[in-house]
Length: 243
Image (cartoon, rainbow, N blue to C red; front, top):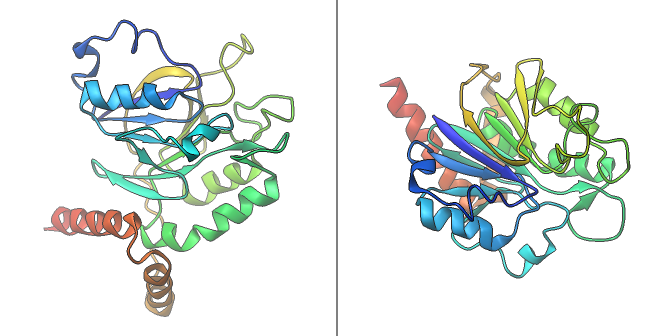
């Protein structure tokens, strides 16, 4: 499976010099934030591939004019091509504005999503705008990473964490790819193609009363939302896989 990842800078290769052959074997596209809405709409329209995105700290226009035809991953899990993706947009708070969070606020965001993550038996790809602290972030407050992302990687062990925010042009020593435990951390700056390979980690499933109460809370919280549709697709896929 092949994924096109983009972030932070609209690629002239993809936009100005568009060619159908670029997207021939791409299954879907992930944006890690700070890209013009019309660029993402262009990508999904001309490629006819689904685009999933999280907002970056400069994407306040998404609140009133989101990317047309694209799926917002922020605080949600989407199931695509057998892969569970969770999105967490925004950056470390450095001034007043939307899509910026303190470490405490990002921890709270993740804590609220635990019921959903457990119901999906973990995730395969974590999509963020900000990096994890110490793993591809910057020294200044604006580009500081979140420590809670490192803790998330240790607990859930997704195959990939895909982020943006820290431009690779900021520092010649910046790395596109970093391996942490069983997770590949990828900086999607500009664009990058990913040949997806699962790390085959199986998150411990809930059982008994824990599973029962988690399921109750899950449906109470997400009834009537896109998350339920994605969960049903995931369960149908797992059922077909086991037959």
